[in-house]
Amino acid sequence: MPDLRRQIFESGKTVSRKAASREASRTNSRASSKQTSRQSSRNASRQASDDEDSGFLSDDTALSIGSLDDENPETENVDWPQELSDRMAEILDRKRSSVQGREEALAAFCRLIKYHYAEEETRPHITDLLSAFARSIRSESSTRETTLALRAIELLVITSCDDKIYENAEPLLTRCIRDSTSNAVKAAAIYCLGACTNFGGAGEEGILEQMTFLLDIIASDGQSIDANDDPISVTAALHVWGFLLSEVDDFESESEEAVQIFIDQLDSSDSGVQIAAGENIALLYEKSYTPQEDDDDEDSEEEEEGDEHANIHPSGGRKLIKRYNAYHNTPELERQLASLATVHSKRISKRDKKSLHGNFASILTTVENPRRGPRYNMAIDQDTNRHYGSTLTVKIGRHGIMTIDRWWKWVRLQSLRRILQGGFAEHYFQGNRAVLENLPVMMRTMAEASGSDDRQTARRAARMRNSKRWAAHSDDDVDME
Image 1 (cartoon, rainbow, N blue to C red):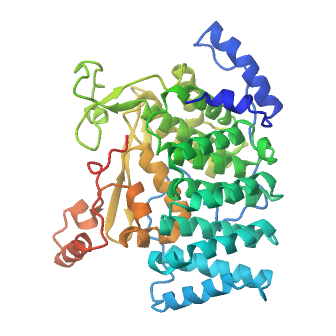
Image 2: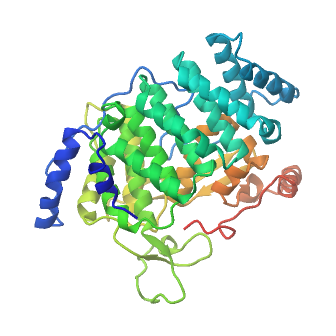
Image 3: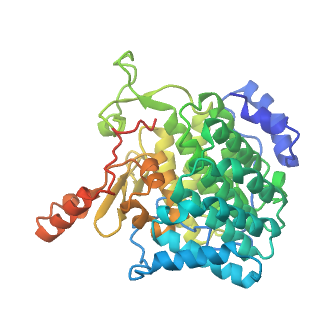
């Protein structure tokens, strides 16, 4: 696989002066000493733009989702198939439509297929719908219409899993990311491109190509797409890059360069950029460890005293073995992460400070021992100065609990949650293939988790398990490493 840094800085693409200067000096600094810390830092991205639309950009940060039991306003809408059919007809008929009318039709379409698993209802119209959405994106008559059309494509591709969508949508989305005059539209298009790449049939080659494109955006602070120092676009690129990385098996040769780019983003003045970069670093370190094979030396790695379970892979009790160094200067990285985990600057809001502390304590724990996944309720043992905490669990719907014990699970859950929002549980329980294939984890019921003997709860749990659309995936079913 070609070198990522060389692709970015020798491809003729636009990069920032800081990024170019940083690359020129990095070779010398690495040659002198691997223990030398970075000689420069920068504020990579600024405060959020007023164009940010919370309708398509989630404000959830890492380790903050305790429940996916959002209220579903569509619960009593038994006529939703007819309403969806009517809205699709409106979207396809543009002859007498207005911008406001198209916005309303797109918003209704997104609402309906977000809260209902409408694979059967949308499949016959995929080609025509994509053409209609593309016209709204190309014309960019209003920011709202364009972002809603991009959201509609995201929801359509995650609902249909049509492997032709990527090849049809990718040129349009790439052009939108580069040429749109709105940073909010650029960010929405980045997220949409990620969904199409993952669910729309891009394959490994397409995934790696888009990861390079996104890394270019991150390394240049958005300048490569004319979104200079825009945290919305940079954060979107970071989120999607991590989502795509979770689909890649071997990233050893590119890990060093990618970690360095994300380390640079830890100096951002925007907490969302910092946390997204940190999550990707944790994921890259996690990928440097894989389950022990039969021909591995049994004593190749000693278990960490007092935390034997951290060395065990969740899927089958196999030990996790280090395969390569994710980054050449882990001690310096640990110092930087520890600083973010305890930052007390008065210039940072209380909310951002709390988020930085919790997230980077968890990220640091993984970098120190990549066998450990995301943890919540992080704390520090004052005697040993070691971080500890409970494994993250997420409530899904009223009756389910999912354990998020690996970073790849967390990154995928975050991405699926951002796309489906309050409709996540509905798609999960109704058997959406994209959701179940991306999160092949066995979900416990509340009764099982608490040991409840309540008969009604037990019967309800049994019905869910026996449902024809319930997919009882587990880590043993699919090798996610």
